[in-house]
Amino acid sequence: MGPTHDDMTLAGISRALNRPLRLNQEALQLVKDHYRRLESKPKLTKYRTKMATLPQRSTPLPNPVGTAPGVKMQESGTTIFSLPGVPSEMKAIFRSSIIPYLESFHAMRPREIEIRITGIIESALAPVLDQARKSYPKLYFKSHPRGRETGIRPLILLHIYNIEPGAEEGISEAAAYVMVRLARIGGRSKLAARK
Image (cartoon, rainbow, N blue to C red; front, top):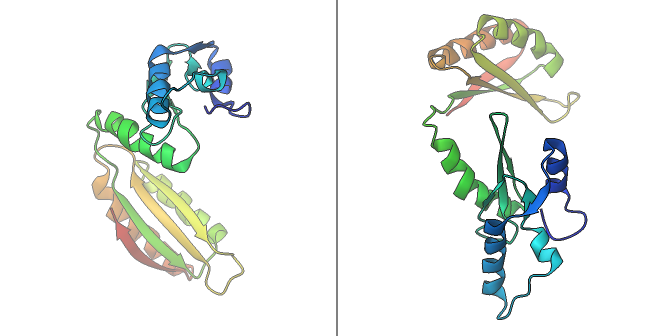
């Protein structure tokens, strides 16, 4: 997305989607506006126009803190976003363009519970999660090991999310289900956060 030869993200997306790269006039204007703030007589070099060369039928997203615009594309009913890799730029575009896009669907945010688990390793947790997934198919269970299994107190963070409307009530029930089964195998668990 950037000006150098090794910035090949959009070329890769262009190839994957079979959409030729084209100079996007809206993106070019964003690049020009950025350089006008930095230089009294900005020149549009090939390196600068590269940042405005997007896969055909793409929409540029303004970059509030950098030069290269983000890019939004639609393909077969899927929305694809491509953002610069510089963390401050990525975060700024995400906040200013992607969050409002996601919020426009007025979808309910998933509820989440986090359980902190000690005393067992992740492979011992796996069968408990398999049982829980079968009992609560509208929920998503994701474990995140912290530290090493051979440590004194291995820690696993387990997140339980609703993935379908109407599954919110089942989250607390699923957390209790998991915690009871963990106690049976020697694990200790604590409900740590509710979002």
